[in-house]
Image 1: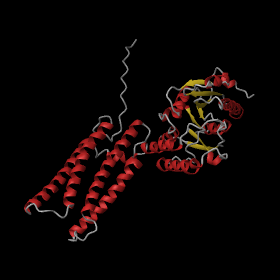
Image 2: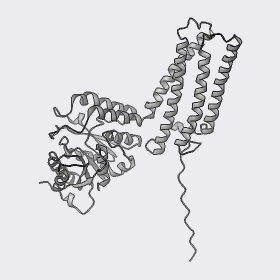
Image 3: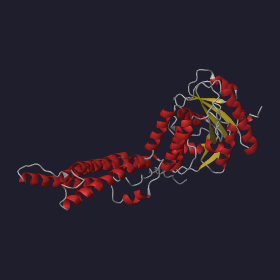
Image 4: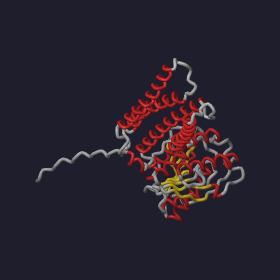
Length: 415
C-alpha cells in the first residue's frame, strides 16, 4: 500500500487533492486508492507532502464514511453544484497546491504530479489536456468530443486568448494563492470555464500537460447534462466578455446603419430618392439599428467598467486617454446637443409639412434621422448616469478608483 503519511502528518501538507462528491460510494474507493498512489509519487518525485479532501455535496449513500476510511478528510459543501463543491473543497484544503479531479474513475490522479510540477515552475494554473493525452473508447460522447468541447474551447480562446487545448478537462491544478486571486463563484459546470477565463484576464500563467480520460466506472449516468451545461458555459463566456456580447454587435449594427443612411442621403441629395433601392423602409431599419448600436455600446461600456472595478479585468489603455474627456457631465452635454439637433430636424420637417398644407410626405428620411438623434441623445444622458452609478457613484467614472487613505497613526509622546 502506498505511503500516506502525508495525510496523517501534523504539518500542513504541500498538495491537496480535492474531489467533489455526490453519492459516489461505488467509485470512491478506487479513486481514493488512486489518489494515495499520486501522493506517494508526489513525495518520491517532488518531495511534497499531500492530503486528500472530499468535498461532499450532500451524499446519502455513505460516501463520507468511505472517504474517511480511505484516509481522506471530508469537507461539507452545503451549496449544491459542481463548482460550489470544489470551491468549498479548495477553501477547506490546507495545501498550497490544489489538485482537482472527479471521483468517477475517469482520471488518473498520478498524472496530476506533472501538473503540480508545472505549478512549482511558476504556473498559477495547470490544465490537463485529454486531446493531447488520449481518450479511451466510449469515455466521451461524440457530440462532446467533436462538437461541444472544441467549439466552446475555441470560443473561449477567441474571447480571452487563454491558449488551452481542452477547456473542460476535469483534472487540473492551481496554487492556493491563485485560487484566492481569482475569486471564483460559479456553482455549476460553468465553474470550469470561469477558472480559465479569470486566470487569463488576471494574467496568471497557464500551463498544460497531457492527461488520459478513461471510462466512467459508475453504474449510473453522470451528473453532466451536455446541452444544458454547454449552454451554461456559453452564456458564461458571453457574460464575461462585454466586447463580444455588446461591442461587436454594436459595431456591426452601426456599420450597417451608417451604410444605409449614407446611401439614402446620397440618393436624396442627387434627386434620385424615388428610384433609389434604399427607400423609406430601409431608412426606418437604419434608424432602429443605430439606436440599437448605441444601446449596446453603453451596455458594453457599463459591463467593462464593472469588471475592471471587480478586479478580474485590466483597464484598457484607451480608458486613461478617454478619462480626460468623458464624464457624466460630458455625456449629459453631448446627449443634450444630439437631442436638440434631432428636435431641430423634426421641427424643420414639421415646418415643411405645415407649409405644404399638411400633405403626405413621401420621404421619411428626415423624420427618421431626427427621431433617431433624439433617442440617441436621451440614451446618452441616461447612459451617463448608468456608468456613473456602476462606477461607485463617481461622475468621473473612467478615472481609476483611488485607494482608501489609511488613518494616520497617533503621535507618540517622547519618553
